[in-house]
Image (tube, rainbow, N blue to C red; front, top):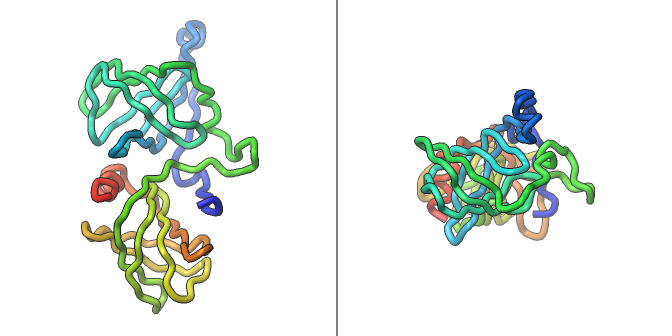
Length: 205
């Protein structure tokens, strides 16, 4: 997995200034669209719409209740614990347990030189793979909005284009092989998965 580096293009990260009143109150925040991983025994999926040092607002697939403790992971930050303070439809506001260096989500490179990546979801699924004329069934080991890690079979080279069909739900995703190593390969999707599609795949983990 260490060689799988998805670029920032997999997600929209757009910093927007908060109002002057919010800045004076120390509540500066940024509007973003970031895939989030709701940590737990059964991981969940959310889409973060804005974030600050003290909390975030996100749209959830499995909506939490006010007062629920949650732990959310986004690119550039480790898993962050917090408490749900409000819920409106599928959206909820989370207050972090401690201030977070949220500016890291805008970096294109970590301090160690690695590329920040969207969170991965471990799965134990199978996928029908077609790369050019090469067809085989593979085990899918993890997935994110931008790609998946699978077990390689036969000659596979980076740059091969094709598609995978995720079983048992039958989701078809086109993409390109981005790396091959130690019997595994990374498959980068042509376009990011919608939140509900990713959640459906993770739900069959």
